[in-house]
Image (cartoon, rainbow, N blue to C red):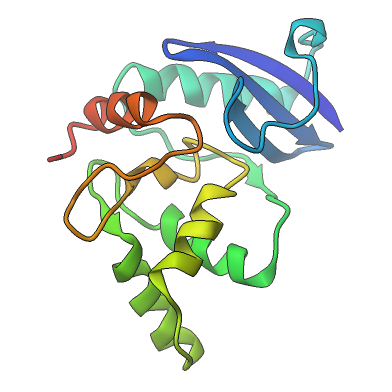
Length: 163
């Protein structure tokens, strides 16, 4: 596992790459941040890191870049189902925890609660790229975000989401 840091406009980020797959992207200090001292991370040459850096640069300029690298988040089968649905939320759009639960219910054929979806959303290890900031409460409220609600607002504003 290699770690890289990225200076975003809303705080330092840590990127985890396993060979050529992105396994993590966190804002420093966010909930579930790995036990890594980001100040000691040195950005060594890495083709995958360069792709992620270019993606983040474009994203933070308000663009909607294509993901041209492999994402390999670590989590349960249920979490992977949730993250797949989050990844499918279009740029500039949002969905509620309940809406995602209903989509997964249809695919799995069994009841899924909005709270269970919320737990998986909160543990998304690849922030921004797997856009958990696009998930809102049933009433459209900006419910919790592992990176902080102010960052969630910032990201939604970049995308010109109607919030």
